Length: 214
Length: 92
Image (tube, rainbow over all chains, first blue to last red; front, side, top):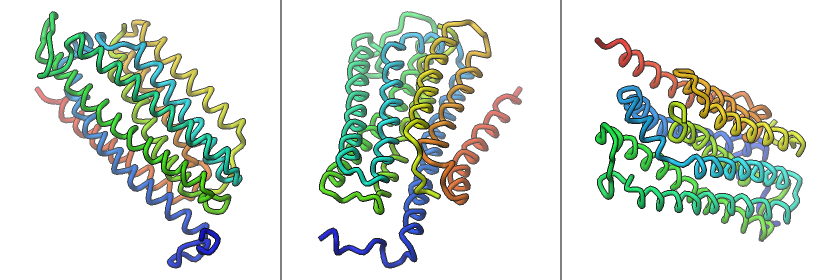
């Protein structure tokens, strides 16, 4: 079946043109994602400059020992993702499949660490509304910090989850021979999404875990 | 163009730089620089993001139109942050 499909869809002149259109579409989506997270970052910026002491005290309740290794996990996943796209460009089916699977597993690893971290936050009574107890000054705005923390990391975790599903699908496609040196763009596009999710975390990590000096 | 195949060595070098910058950003957070802690952390994050976008996301090897689309997202984000902070910082 796969051999019978034409190299490019009928609305495109060449495969190269189709590839460019596909990547441009993903970049357009990512531009909307920048503004989606950007609105929340704006909200965060406003609150942080308004209540600097409360935000610093609240941030120090988070563990760099969770956030730091998780950043490293995502950076590793970005490397394996880049190498997966490279293997796809070279038409190395097994390497592509394996690297995509490893990238997805890094994503799962990130989510597991995040899960343990959320559990710690719960045990330490840092979950706004649901289970929140604050000994220090300005509990109201410390709680505001944790609202932003849960919304930002929660939405990011949702993006990681979607990314893992996409990577799993692309890995299966690759395993079945659906990705060739000519038609590798699906790996490229999935990679763009995955790297974007990594970039979001690159900003969230210092903004949430490293406020002021520890 | 977009099908440029980047050497593995380049990817490994970028990865090394990203991990080193992660180390630096954590180390800097334990030094008291006053207001400059935030500036340092954000500068390092921007450099990391730029490395990922340029090399891992192949912006360097892509068509010019992709630059425009990628740039637009960050440009509008900059407008939002800058104008809101202009208002915020100049209120009595």
